[in-house]
Length: 297
Image (cartoon, rainbow, N blue to C red):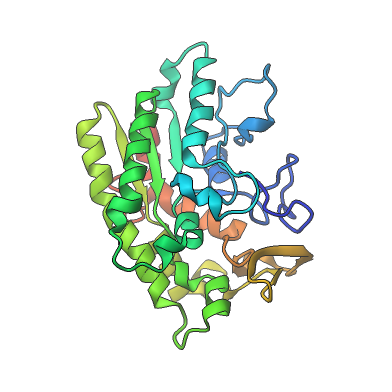
């Protein structure tokens, strides 16, 4: 959760708190909560001590990632996954009953910032992505299990080379920057077996992979089928001269639903909606079981 530029266009279609989302409207987490009739998950740090997290909370931190060292590359005072888990741990301690945790859904959507901002990852093709990024993620998922989590929805990474920022900066001869797509695919390839191994070793756990890479590929191949007309440009104005992918002011496109990307790296509300809609019932997008079955399990 968090807005990389609070004075800009973020949350233009959906402002419910002081920290609008890093998109024009709702996030995937918002759509999950909405689908199951729950209140939208508030930013955990915005809650008062008297407020309950009975119906969930959002521990995400804009611009951060899985690896602790990302802090040296990112903007602001973001919280890496370890710090987010510490916040979750503190909230679990304050719950009157922890048995509800086993029925709760833990949604993890990370990895893009690690590959974007950590130059060691981005430009070192010899690095083993499993050892360097997927393995640390696995360790932290086990930590969340130890705190009481049992149902996990874990997203892979979208096609990094097809984002407006990647295209504008590297100006590929093909539609996308294949080097970056290969980096994303390498990380993504480790996740299915990693989650399968976790489920087989952690008693009572359920791990489901949300294949956002596939959803983006489907939209890119037939955008009109999803009501989208622009898959290559950001809806909001960005400062490409300063190589900054976030919205620089309040200037936005008039029809946000026509765009796949709101800024140069984050999807629009309509893309977030498409991803969760596909995940709900499509076991080729959320696997090995769809989101509806995971929640009911």
